[in-house]
Amino acid sequence: MECTQEGCGSEATFELHIPWTDNRVVCAAHARVEGEKDGIVADPLDDADDEFPEGAANR
Ligand SMILES: [Zn+2]
Image (cartoon, rainbow, N blue to C red):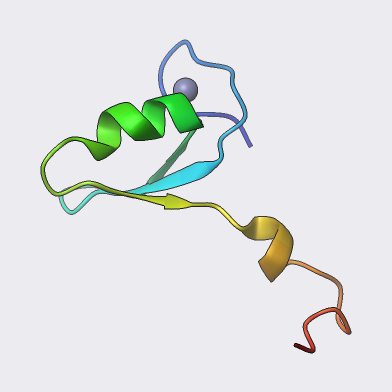
């Protein structure tokens, strides 16, 4: 998944939770910038953890 910021092709590693629009995924650098804005929360993506094949979820 790529960063959704215009002109940025970096790997997206964060999800931005934006109260007034849809969530977006961005790279770490943009997450830092956007996360400074009022109301926006940057959450690290942990797809790898959530999408393990069955069996790996037994913790
Ligand atoms: Zn970016």
